[in-house]
Length: 222
Ligand code: DC
Image 1 (cartoon, rainbow, N blue to C red):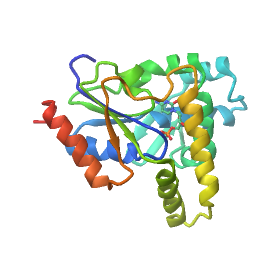
Image 2 (cartoon, helix red, strand yellow):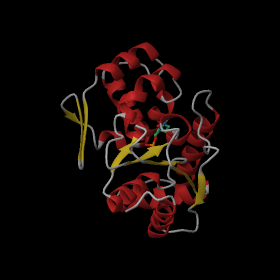
Image 3 (spheres, rainbow, N blue to C red):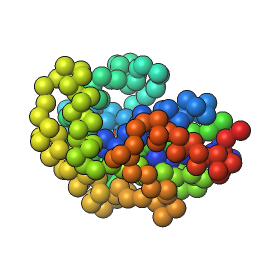
Image 4 (tube, helix red, strand yellow):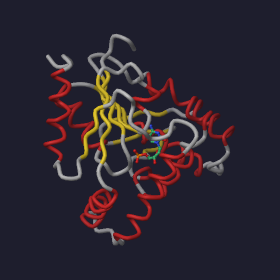
């Protein structure tokens, strides 16, 4: 891990981490880890197998056994494509719930670190800079106001033709923030050496450029 450069992008749900991480990885020709997808997979696969989302032992066994393969448009989990199933609000809330189980987080550590292969990795999540990739040469903490994050999510869902209410999305986002920031293990917070980017007033291109500029300043780009 020491020789493979890693850029970590942590932040609350809806801050745009996933989009930014993919765009930055594409620009650099690096790999990308969507760690939230792993927690979402655990929730969806656990529920499909009749496990409770508080069944730590059962979920750990599942984490150790599941065959997971990420492809650009698919996420294969024991032969099933879960790419759509993990995107919904139920999967997100379930992921937040299983993410508060300490031993499950440990069980998923190595799987995440295995993504750090040459030429480099952009990893997004909640604890990429504070736990999983402590030595990363660039750590970004990406945030935006809860209202702006709810608005972005609302527009996404409306564009997909799904009827949603903005107040209920805002409520969900605040509840998720509260759970992610106040859990005992690996709570969401900026790493001491993270650069803070507030994207409330920025578009995607501006944030991507800000991260790439930081990467260049730290000698991570050729
Ligand atoms: O980034 P996301 O919305 O896909 O994450 C869904 C949930 O998964 C999030 O609310 C908390 C949990 N999670 C986590 O605990 N640790 C991570 N590194 C990534 C996600």
